[in-house]
Length: 403
Length: 78
Image (cartoon, rainbow over all chains, first blue to last red):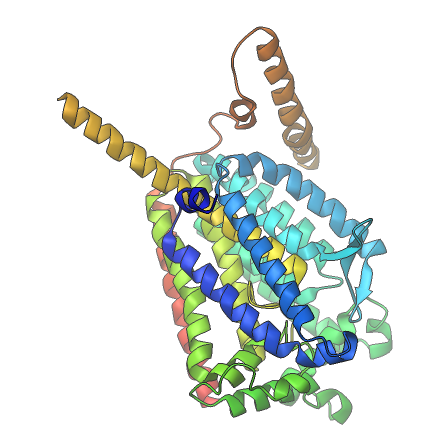
């Protein structure tokens, strides 16, 4: 069976290698970072979260393997169903979602009693759906309605449904979608107008956020949390002298200490001390723990892995014969890499606090499942190119022999 | 414009997939050896990759790296 799997593994070997390295880092970092959590909720059974992560890792690898064997062209039709399903799930989450860490972003699946973050699902569905629309309208990209408006509407609907409970994810998804429109040959004037409109909306939104009293803002989702995060990120620009709001968030201070302790060279796995103080060291702030244990070298290596993955996907695009495969693969790769860069930016305090995880590395069931699905789809496009190339070589050989 | 969009949504979501399924059953009943997969992929919906897509991907990679370098320099100054 192992041999059968080995011979069936197709697609870019370097992308497979990157996935494996990220999973190994994930195992080491999660095992180390969940020590305190294990004492708090599992009576000191530190192996529990290691076993959970191992199951997730093998499950993720199986998912990537399974999905990469599917012809990527089927994802075009599947994307339609996923897109409408994601709208339904987001609406359900908005009204009946499970509240975890003061945010209603999760949906508890009945019977199995597992929680999933519906925005992860919607992100995957939206990018797949955009790739489908863009591929279908390649001949009509100059037309505003056909080549732009019809693609903008799904983006607006999904982002509007995510924004009340998860502002950062919605903004990142919006930005990623605009980049997908860009690579899908959308008219540059329209994209420029959209970016301008986005910037103006952001400025107006922030102005409104700071115009109303906290009591009013507090009534609408997580707007107050967003306002406080903006103030604590740049108190000199947005602060009004209220020390309780302007004080640096606890997790930011702890992350800075972790990075300072990390130094340039690795301290060794399991040697982090800040994992005992940082809230969620196994998910949102796992990059700070990686730097503390593996030094600046380890941090740069992780960053390099994501960039290398993006580079390999870009190389793949050069050989993709169909627009759908090209937009789908690069769009998904972009969304994963942008999420990774933002997670790292938050950990080193270059960006305000968000709830985004480090793809494939952070602990989290739904995050691992949907990230694995995305990697599987990218590798499916890559497999298609490889299989087509093999067929071309065989055909050329047959012609040469026949001739 | 909205009505057109809703029409398109209904067509994409209901008419096309169900139409495909009906077509598959019809062809099978007539003894044609078509696979469900063939019916699932609509014809002419995937255009050839234009060179412009490849150029835009290359440009995006360049911009991505530039932003990253600027952010690293900014963090060092900060």
